[in-house]
Image 1: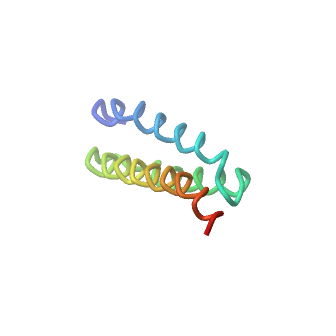
Image 2: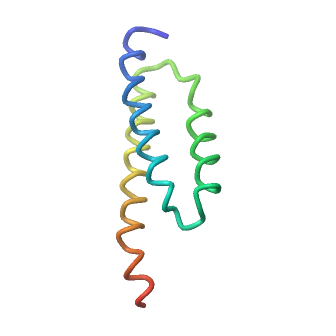
Length: 80
């Protein structure tokens, strides 16, 4: 692990924990969400290129926003 990629490690861990926290309320359940999240992150564990890691973090941030939007819309879906 190069020094530049090791500086990104805390960001990766942070977004993983944030997604894991959001997964508690996932409509299909935490037992559905957690293994898929782990698999998604594990599949990218071998990345060494700093730009690729940053793209992965950006993708995870996008997914986080989509999940938050899903939760925000949930009450409205029940009314319709």
